[in-house]
Image (cartoon, rainbow, N blue to C red):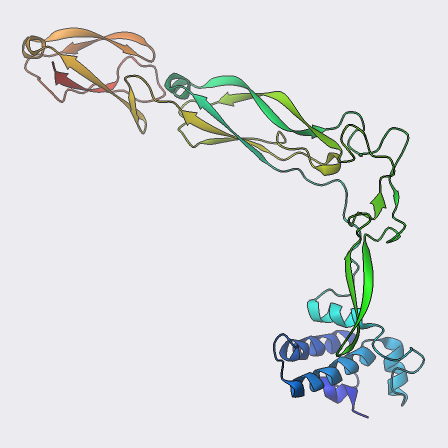
Length: 315
């Protein structure tokens, strides 16, 4: 009979963690997906058998007293789920049922504003359609007077186990329970309003304050205004993406506005005053004599428009 300690490369006083680390190291090197060589697979069976014995305190104690480690345990690899946990890092901890109440998703909408609203800021009431909590059931998905009950198939674990045979013995695998979808509970009488989801879709108005100076592509985040989660879970965030519409005669360049003026030849030669419409009302600008082109007025986007940046062309 092979020495299981020697097979795993550990001493007889090795701890459970040392045995697990040794097996995981060897298993990664010899697993069929890594090395399909038949000789290596024979060795892998020996390593697996050694871990099956030494990872179980009772089997290890029997082995240390001179037994084969499997006596009284039905033979084979009945505890192979522990081996797979060691290989995949599961640590033997059960996954358990997944919660019905989960975080909602974020939502995105686009809002178009004009240049004046982008310049000075604006408060708007916008209509959005998102998932909201079902008022009829309060989010638990149950018809009035009923409640979820433990799943009869998985007994509330949220998963079912299946044993199959492989070249290394019996392998126990777990998968989400198909009856309760992994929740561990079933809803015998789903809410007729939301069909058991705990939320419904509805249109609502959201107040949003758009600050001065925004540009196309800027996004405003509204916490907790997105989609309500399944089972009445907390809502995600709502993102409002800004689109600034083109202006009839003003062109934005960063934090400046550009305006093109058509000035008569005589006005450019002798000088004149012209009235110009801006975002902040009509102003009068002075065209000095002898300046036929490239005449600029200074302004900053987001401030009161008593002046602006512009270029003069002759008419």
